Image (cartoon, rainbow, N blue to C red; front, side, top):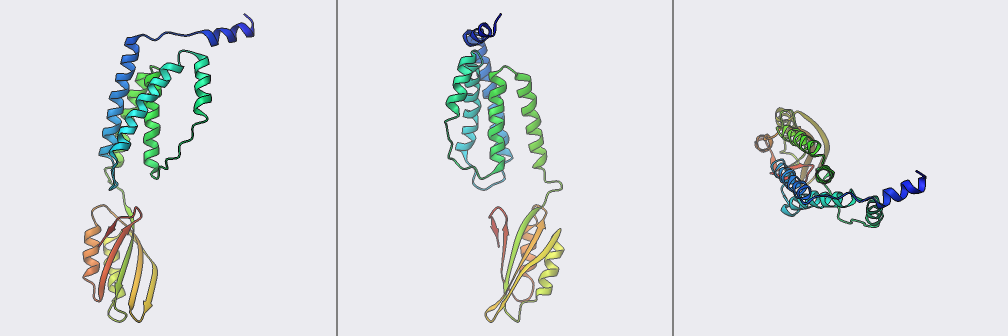
Length: 224
């Protein structure tokens, strides 16, 4: 068989897919997609949860499954799909790296179900879910914060503030100190274990000369 005949065979060959295969692939994609959505919601740590993004993950898994079943049966369709998708540009900015990982997970579910690699999809999704739940246990986790303390120019006892901060923090470093006629301000960079934020704020507020305390995490959340 010549190279031309081989190429014509690949381009003209069209493997049929039964209705039962299509239905089972879509059902598997829905099951794994719902599992992914549940894991996303259960492990989400931010304050602005987006239900639409979670629904989009499920839709991406289903759409990828359909695309894989279409292009997997014909080489010509596969080449045409690659060409058409190469001209698409997505302008939506995704700020959280975690969300990008979930999008890749949705695409992988679609690829596995569309190509009938169900075992890889199930085992891979189960492993990812276990890893995410273990990562959310916060057994040895710590969060980074900026602590801003303001007080009187003469009344604020900075030594007492530093002692209170060190007593509640895993690591602390004085980043800035500003002294003026109106008062003084000190900024600390520190690491805290989860659920220790309120204890730190209360301890610093009890120090002599403290007028205000602001505890800001690197994610933008403010306490105090």
